[in-house]
Image (cartoon, rainbow, N blue to C red; front, side, top):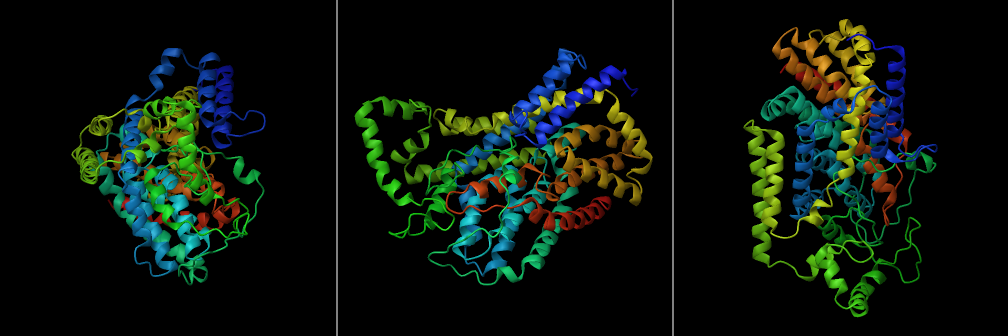
Length: 536
């Protein structure tokens, strides 16, 4: 593709630069509008500056990817309600043999959950639960947070629905679900084992003990400046919205996990005003006041509170749907039957994907089947879908396509292509290094959108098998690249933010402490995975 006129190249590059800055640093001082708005701003500038037409912008939005992403998010919401993540939490604490056993279980559960429910969902739901387990067993949180984030990234590489970039690759490449899984699964299994082994080697001495204690005062051992974390706010790639949390409850916004972690509330000393992390620990007092508060609302507002609960929102805009479900619980046999049906429908979706049916419509069909099965207003569940993520993808599709039209990516790839051919070991290594670098600089999804078609076209000139190998290499490398630094993936940022904002178990994971583990582990795991994928 020839380069466009200099003016168009400059304008397109400027619009893409604005998108990139806001995507990587969503709270920059001069324009703190966030990732989603930054993505839409980049898309709008591409059209307003004449880099692409409005019709071209609409055509750039990939509806099959959005449909697949929406469907998997809805399925994840209903699986969360069906206590799937509560059962995964039980696997972490059931007959634990100490700190090292807990670390290995964290890696296994995180990798499995992320492959089926996306890595972001896994990190949102499990972060605080893992913090509570670590504190209950008098263990340092850092190894477990690193295990959760890194294993979630590695495990998500196994399936097309494991993370957003795999969704893009699966749709653009036309590779079937089964072919994708069988091509990357060996690399994922071995990579997860190697990742867990590296964590054990690095933190072996810190994982001694692991016996539960009644009260453990966990003082964060790492203190970093607020800007190190707050400059990277909660990512739009989150699959489940974290609700505003109260002391004594999970910050995850999940009824399923909330019911699980509430078993681990620690006793509050009568003479203690704060807990070990400097937070006011008045959860017991608030729990005692909750019934009276609810009764007071009904008394003052009459039927208004009940109407608000039925409609899913109160007068002040806050959702009461979870309270309503607790006030009118489902009969035990109906609850078990409903949960069984949720699992069966989800299994049916996975079978449909393995059989090669259209992935987008399979996910949407499963989502609608769950909504009908629930047989009540679906708004509360649909509100938990991350619509900012869908808008972020729309803006990103347009912005990246506009940048492609400038000719800059094609010119850069033409320079790199002779050295990054997939049919030689040295070419594969160079291609992997380019993907690792771009994934940590420009994020993994834009990297896949920029390189995917070009890498595949170059490999297709060699053989169809080489083309498939190139797509799998791109999927594996761009996903595992997220472990290199704290900014490498949304899953890392979610774990960091969830841990820092935890009311009772706050812990700050710094950029450099993550890099000490992430840099060597990423290079080792990526290299091992590439060897397995080349032999596929």
